[in-house]
Length: 402
Image: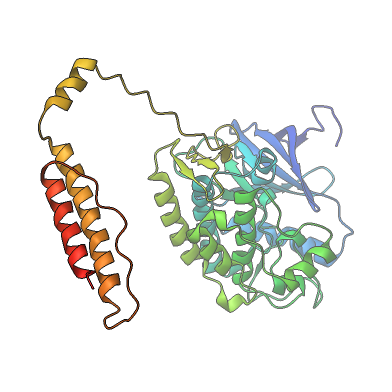
């Protein structure tokens, strides 16, 4: 498409402003609807090979989007064609970014992921109820509005979605989708149902939480890994996330929850996370401290979970010195509660020791071996403690007499 003003005006109405994305089948531009004076997104399909399959996909998307309406789906306003005869979709423009670009800044805080995931699973539950599966749930197809009080994320690009009961547009055994986010059944070209979208969303949520794509590499590498193992879910995410993600990414489609069930569980996780005040800290088993970030999810405000080094405990302040006169007064007191407790402890220890000696001595009745006499005597101690020690000494001496 050229650079002149006339060439940048599509269908005599939509003026292109700037490219905002591209995929394997189309390019997306931010544009202005000069008739209504509003911003829109134009998805302009690339010129294909003219096959019936290619045209069927383009017109199929138009019909599909035209009858779907949900707050968490990108709205289709119109469809037209450009001067070259290419199909053009006029879509709702969502100011913000997509999850793929957002991940370049690192993982997203769990509260934000739970809120976005709840919106996305609601959108999936809606299209599933209409007999549609998306088949290409991935970060690039998740839009994150810059500012929104109602919706945290929107699902876009139903270009390769299909009706569950419709005939296949592709040959049996062929694969359509993005390799890193395909379900195991999708990777091998088996028949699909709504559970495939739940699996893909599970991988996306895991990546948003960790900042790491679980199955990277080529299509063959990603598909092979998918069939050989389950995704690794870090224990640090906590039991709620671990249990949900394990169920969503079960290799058996029958073991996965529905999108409705996922939405309800994520809404609960989001509510639990946002009940913690912003900036609250929790200590991980490895001693690091995690700052909970609960800001809205968007390109400016969504913040990655920050890990800070564990801080050493501050030293206790020194005790003030006790005046000399106070010490003299305390020593002059005949009996204090503290001293009474000390005496009681000493007496208790003495009684226990003496009792142990007595038990040891009487435990060998009739023995011909003479038990040696105790060495020395208890030291002279005045007061009640001294009287008790004298009694113990006498008892021990009497017991050990031949």
